[in-house]
Image 1 (cartoon, rainbow, N blue to C red):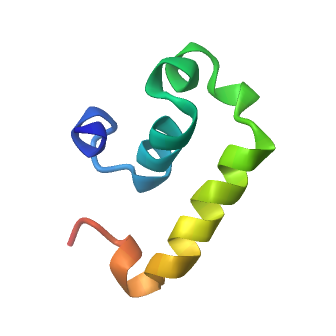
Image 2: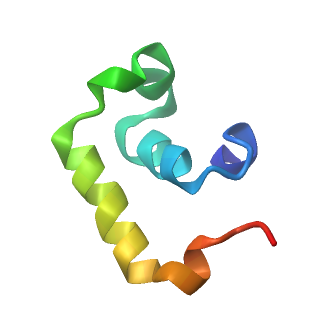
Length: 55
């Protein structure tokens, strides 16, 4: 659902999932450090070959 909401942008999807899409949409510039670290951790686990969602 969030992937559709953010048009396939995985970083925004992860931020919305972790911090809450309402918070993200209110003020994305206030993204907490914990959420930034969460995004980087998930992307690292996925690896570059799985990070690309579109061809």
